[in-house]
Length: 194
Image (tube, rainbow, N blue to C red; front, top):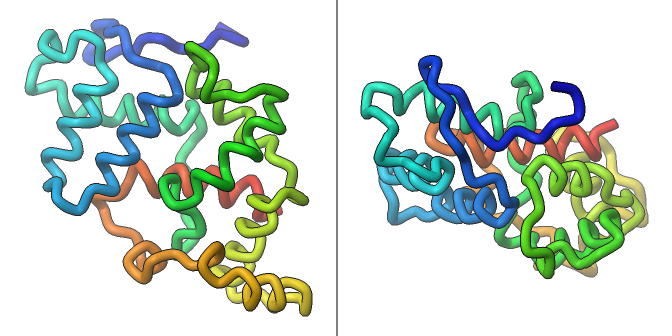
């Protein structure tokens, strides 16, 4: 229904309640960034964190459940062509991201007892491009696309190397096991790539 925020996912015709608070999704991202977890462990953490009654989910439905989680975390948007490199890291960029999200939301989102992921992403996508986070993201995206940087952008990079840097591992070609994290980098790219 128009204007409704999903709180369940349907897997093989059965509806399952999910944890929709934005903090839960960010914890899933932390698991996907954990190099000590195998791909299978990452998938299991994702499903266990998302489904309130994970034990009721049949093993044969895990693949469809994972696809539904992917849809949910993508805010129901269709999958689009992805840029070749990452321009954002949810964990490293957290100190920049939250002030920008808070400004867009008009409140401290981390202080709320509950905030639906889709609402959080609405605030995220409304981040002011003139904010520090917007500037960092815009420059990273221009560099990733091979576009010429303006003089002030080159100076910003020179003066803020640690802020601008992403790990070499993050900046290389995407891998299949990073599908969820990649999708959210895409959401960020859509925001700043216009």
